[in-house]
Amino acid sequence: MAEPPPAPITFTPFGLLLPGHVRRFVDHPLERASAMIEIKHLVKKYDDVIAVDDLSLEIGDGEILALLGPNGSGKTTTLKAVAGLTIPTSGQILINGIDVWERPKAARQYISFLPQRVAFHNQLLAREVLEFYARLRGVPSSRIDEFLARSGLNFNGFAEKRIGELSGGMVQRLGLAVACLPEAPYLILDEPTLSLDLEGVIRFRDLMRRLRDEGTTIIFATHVFSEVQHLADRVAIMMNGRLVTLTSGAEQISLEDLYLAQAGERRDA
Image (cartoon, rainbow, N blue to C red; front, side, top):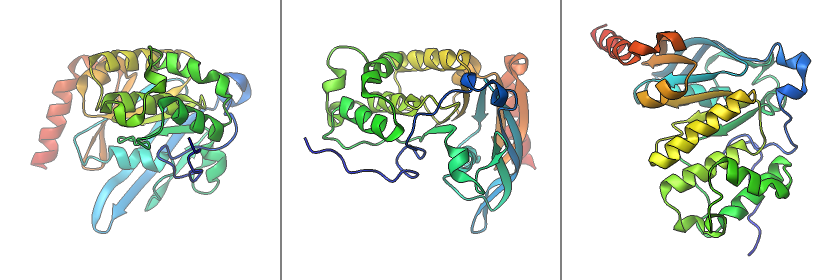
């Protein structure tokens, strides 16, 4: 089979496919101490619509942060801005002190991004997809089976199936495996469980916990309470483009009531 054509390095379906293997922060103790994503007064407008309204947030090293909110609350726009895939109207985003827009290549090398909708060419085999993106990211092809196993995709025959033969959930899980290929310090996921069945959700949770324990910082957007309660160390609730509440893990016992109360307040405002 002919090799798929090279994808644009920055704006592939995964946004941040830079050549070269990205080493983890555990290999860089001096950098690890200051590892952080800082969002400062982020504003994003589309004509007269304000998608993100003066958002400020810090995400520390080795935590799982959930952006929780209804459709249209600004979650996806925020993630795309952090990933360098949309230009803010104003504000600043720093990754380990590096401005995403002043030094995009330097900032993006630390990030891997999984979009809400994952798409690959239907005629490619699952293994070919992983091999292609592994080459782009400088990951040895000998590690493909390792990433299949980490994502729970190492059962008989999966790697040799064509994309067109896979369910939406399996394509999503393959996308997650691709996003994990560079072992980037920051993993940004937009609605990662939306297409997953129960087994896929369980395996996703297990993978996220293992990655966090290994030092990866994970930011994911969702409107599913169970994912927040199972995974998140902190929860940022967004409504109408604004951050309305930031909770810690200890405060999540009444998260649903808090969310509904905030939603009611925003509607009444």
